[in-house]
Length: 313
Ligand code: SIN
Image (cartoon, rainbow, N blue to C red; front, side, top):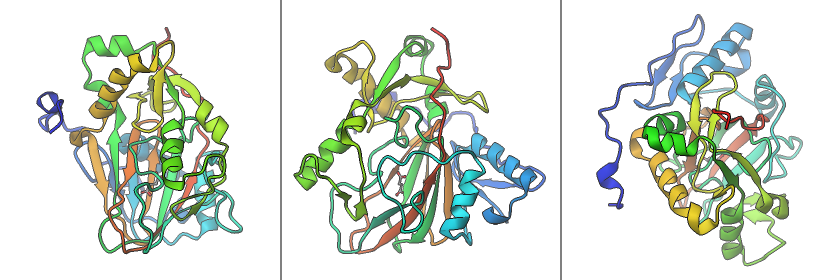
């Protein structure tokens, strides 16, 4: 039990994650807080109306997934581009012939304390324009284990007290990759020559990742207007204008607050499951609990905007 357990949010909160019903797109919610399965469509066949509805369903549920998708790397790229320009991939070189499709792989015989995406994070938040949307396609999935879990950052913000919201409104969080690089250094025991994370070939600019960027701690979704807490457990390293020893207790509280189980949904992957999530309004992490089994997924991302503050200071 953590010291916060007496103050946790409990499961008697109002239900927020109602099914979405459009003309073509309908969903089955996964948990009370977020996440939903989109039923009876193939992503590569969506017409414009269905795609607009899919986006609305995504803003509403924060993470949506579809089973039994017939999607080649080329199809995945075409689908991802419908959301806008492809995102900067700060980590990998991509699949052969598809530099914008990033493999996320852990081999059956690999034993590693760190895996790609293993801490609570929002994708590549150290970038000036972090990815807005990520698309992850299950290629080879362990028979059990290897789930991904997401947390609703809008609910996390809404459940803070008025006093805390007021204090956070003008703050900027320094997002940088110190912790990722630190863990990789421990494992790989190399400094400027880290070329792999478990089984993924890396192409990273360590200096830029460590420099990072300052983003509003409370941000506004550019399309839905939803207000969310933009703090994670991986990239949030400091608060603008503070010493790290000053910001650390607040960042620790916000990370623990944002990753309470009541805000989450957890996906059990299958081959040809595709999950789509909006990094602006949720956190996620992968479980590293499937030693002995191979796991491979293909990831594409959409270039996000420079995060906008929800409230002008
Ligand atoms: C990621 O963080 O994008 C990877 C998540 C996963 O492998 O489940």
